[in-house]
Image (cartoon, rainbow, N blue to C red; front, side, top):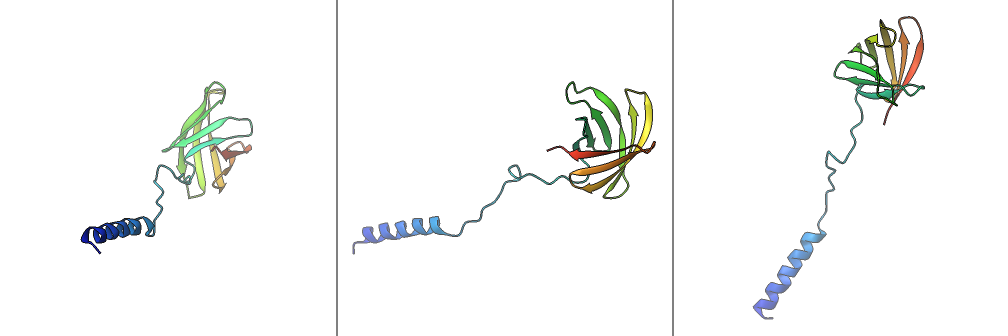
Length: 123
């Protein structure tokens, strides 16, 4: 066999081998969705009011006009318990709300006046 033919066959074999090797599929961090941690993020009540927990601050807004209804702060008492101190812009009152995280998508909350409501994580 001629040397050029041998080199051509070796090059073709090497190229083919590099294409057929085992491949590792990697997902880039921007393509995969991270599971939400704790209460951080947006939650909605049965009336469509959106509550947002972000870095210790809490807000509640309407979905139609984005009007601020209440704001305040929150403290994580445990991985599943959160205490919210908020001021209602509508009633001009302050209140405390305790919420228990049932799972990653549901918060069961009780106000200091014993009213109860549920928040569902917004996707």
